[in-house]
Amino acid sequence: MIEIKSITKRFPSITALDNVSLHIKEKEFFGLLGPNGAGKSTLMNLLIGYLDADEGEIFVDKEKVTRSSLNVRKKIGLVPQSIALYDDVSAYENLQIFGSLYGIKKNLLRAVIAENLNRVQLYERRKEIVKNFSGGMKRRLNIAASLLHNPKVLLCDEPTVGVDPQSRNAIFDYLLKLNEEGKTIIYTTHYMEEAERLCSRLAIIDFGKIISAGSVSELLKLLPYEQTILISKNKATAGKLDLFKLFGTLINEQENYELKPDSGIKLSGFFKALEDNNIDYGSIDINRPTLEALFLHLTGRRLRD
Image (cartoon, rainbow, N blue to C red; front, side):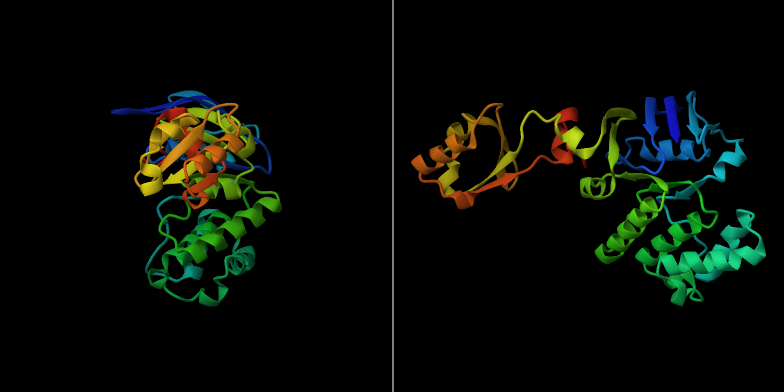
C-alpha cells in the first residue's frame, strides 16, 4: 500500500530524515515511535504531499506522492498534531467547510457529516461553537474531518496530545474500529503504551533514522534480556549492590535500582541470594521488556530525553 524509498529531507539547520525506507501493508495499523524531534511529523508531511523530499520517493497505492500530485491526496486523510479547526463556527459548519474543500457534493455531504459526527459521538453537539469544546472533543472532530472523503489511508500525527484519559480511550477504540473496517493507519507517538496497544507493526525512529522495525514481539526480542528486575531502595538493599551486580547490569535510577540480568542467569539463583541475605521479596518487582527499554538499549538514551 505505502512504499517509502530512501527518503532524505533536509532543512537549513538539520537533516530531519536520513535515508528512510519503509513498507506499510494495506489495512495495517503501523506506528512510528520516537521522541519529539525524531522526524515523525516531517515524514507525515511528506506522505501527505505537503513537502517534497530532497532524495527518494514515496508511493501510496502505487501512485507517487509529490506536492503537485493532487489525485493521490484524495486517498489520504490527515489528523494533524495541532488541531486544525475553525473555533468560531459550529462542529457541523466545520465539517461543511472541509467537505467542500474535498469536493463532496452537497446532497451527499449532509449524510456524510451526520455519519462521521455520530461515529465520534458528537452529533448531539453538532450546533455548538467549537471554541467551547474540550480538547478531547476537538481531537475527535479533527478525526471526523479527516474522514469525510473516505480515504484509504489515515495519517494520525500524535492525535492524543493534551487529551484526557477518557477521550484518549475513545479515540483509541475508534481508530481500532476503523482499522478493522479496512483503513490503513499510520500513527506517530512518543508514548510506548500507545504503540503497544494500537500498532500491529511499528518502526522506531530517532534523529531522522529508522533504528528498527517489526511487530512489538519481534522488536522486544532484540533486547539481550528477557526481563528487568526493579529493586527498591531501602535499608535492606542499600548495602547489597555488589551482590546484585553478580547477576547482571545494575542501573541506579531515581526511585529504585534496575537490574538487567546477564544471559543465562536463572532467577532461582537470584532469589536464593535474596533469601541468604535476608532481603524480602517485597523489595523486588519483575518487569517484562518494554519498548522504552528497547529504545534505551538501541540508542543509549530514554525515549523522552
